[in-house]
Length: 80
Image (cartoon, rainbow, N blue to C red; front, top):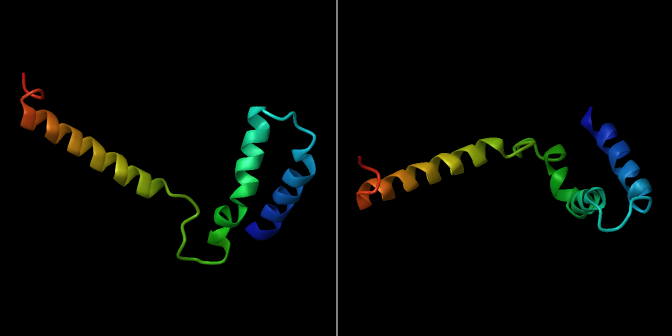
């Protein structure tokens, strides 16, 4: 179901890319997406690839916040 929608989006992005002023935030977003299109749509070909990486990013944030707290406690800065 997603394939025809993404094909339409890709076609639209290609058609409108040259209509947007260079240097604008919109053209930067279009260029970013078009340059990475294969990676952005990889989940369509491999069911094991998640559509987003929210879970991984949450784990990284949690890991970093824990390590940061550990550093503060170990240094004595995290105590009252």
